[in-house]
Image (cartoon, rainbow, N blue to C red; front, side, top):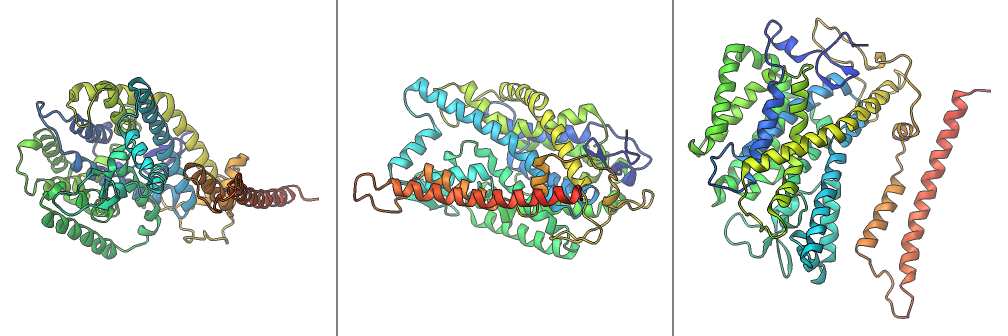
Length: 508
């Protein structure tokens, strides 16, 4: 049954008022506009990573990435207001399921390629060689940290700010020779630092949405000023690592996107359909003619145009199969193109070797279509059902969220106000996984114990000196005992909670 509020569909069964109805109620635009824009931005990154100057250039990859940040800021403002409200944990679960499964799948694929290349060559290939060298040099703790940040994504941008030498990691200077190699060369998916920025913003945005516009503008101004300071101080100009791969200077773009959503009605007044169409044509021209444009200030013009075009672009997120396909390709395309590049170069390919950007884009797009159809669409369907169930499991009205107070669903005057508790009067029986997520006391002890166990296996610590033969088993027993203790504690809490819930559902 279709929801009468039809419109922006992140989940098929959870709809919200159509953005185009509140901004351009009497105008029609191509339904695939936003998806095409996102695909072009991802294609610009792929084109740049082909490292082939003999082909005509497209939009700078760094500018394309910052445009993604603006889109993300706008979209987070949209879904927090129209879908999640104060349901912060459900929002986090939705973002986790959107980002991490496909990332882990691509990470495993990339590792498989590196392992296969190592077996083919008879020695460690590319990034694995750096890990082996660092481990042999006694930098096992650094290797463990690199593994951790690549699994968590939070902090994955930090290796981009360091170099690696025989003595260990060193902080990159603003300019000049840094010595050694860039530590980011040890990242299996080096482009994933941008996803780390996205995750950081997702963690902060439930609080950011509570800020006043004046506060958002002040923080955005500080972030942009910091960006300009790094650009001025660095001899490399806008290609500075500290300007580009450090979160505080890039935070401005997330905030600009968030502000564009909050003040979308004011922006729509400044951008009537004719002016919007002209702005989009200018953006399209800049996209294909970027290398020929002046270096100074061109990115500022692009960011300004994207800011004013975002509300009009997002009105195109209606039910359009082409828009859905193009939009769903941008994330897998961004992830998969680096492993595809390795495959096309072959085991003997060197870092930075030139490759046909057309070939790389074509093969990566085909692989992205396969990922979207076979893996991501099925995951998205399951994610939609899971989030819908969680949103339907509402607490009583007198119980507030522990982070934010309950807020009604804000819509336009024509759609009225509908509280979240009205989403479902008869929610389906949740699965044990959803009940576990619903449970306020997360199994933090089990998670901590599992992390300690994995960290110990990766980089064993000599808690007790191995003075006698076999004494090292005490270390293993200690770590294993800590894990079992934390696990049993959480299992006992969970069973107690389930029993109490069963008694409340079946009173005697």
